[in-house]
Image 1: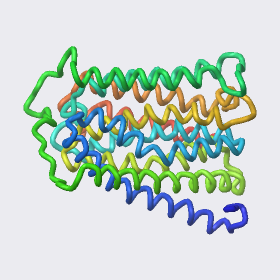
Image 2: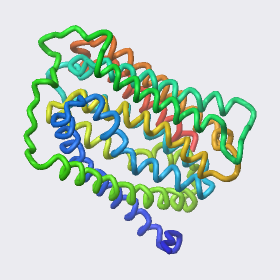
Image 3: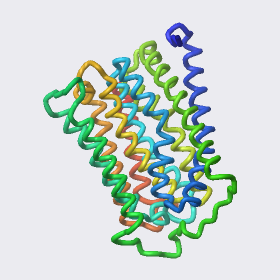
Length: 344
């Protein structure tokens, strides 16, 4: 039985840092495999990014949130999920900096991503409503938990229908990138590529469990609140695949894959709350979270709304070559993180 509490503080910190390195390195490979699968299957970068890349890169986070919830660390579990969504949304602003040609949201216009962003706002707002409502459980599970899964499935179904028969299309400009012009460069068997992708998911999932265990232990030893450790510690580490895959996708020119991977990953991350509520056996996890964790939920809603506005406005060029929405997302995340650190 692995007992992380028996190790020295230095060893626990090294485990935490080592997991971050492994997650970051493997994330680069995942972007390449997902881009190839999108090109070969013709499902589209936005949809493949949302479902395959988004869920695949989120596996470390869901393992972390679920395992910590099972250990009774409700605040760490929920703040890991919400902090991860906030950090990953901020990663799009960093990716916009790497894409120097034009504002990323302008070049990667996609009705699928707009629909997914709208679904994400619903998925994050519902837990805030559950937190404010009287505690309610059926067999130890809050009624919102199955509802979250239902909203997620309906969101994916809507995204698939939008990809097949979009009711409107973004105006094409000389800076709009058309993914239909892509040709696959990896000629290996599609089954082999899918198998390699699945293997990376398993490895990243195991490292996510280690990150959760190390996060709980570091929170206890240093006396830092679970909310801070979750939102700014485990959340960022388990979100490294999203950062790496997003920048890798942008550098490959797979812009819709980059945005779809983040938004789809954030949708999947919202389901962390559902799995955590099932794993948490002391009542409803929504009512066991602190005000500071709910602050991260509200911050996620605002950041996603800013991203959605950027995708709709499609500004060509903003300050420093990036869009105004990227500047706002960086500012919102930095301000939120700074506030949490000051509160301790």
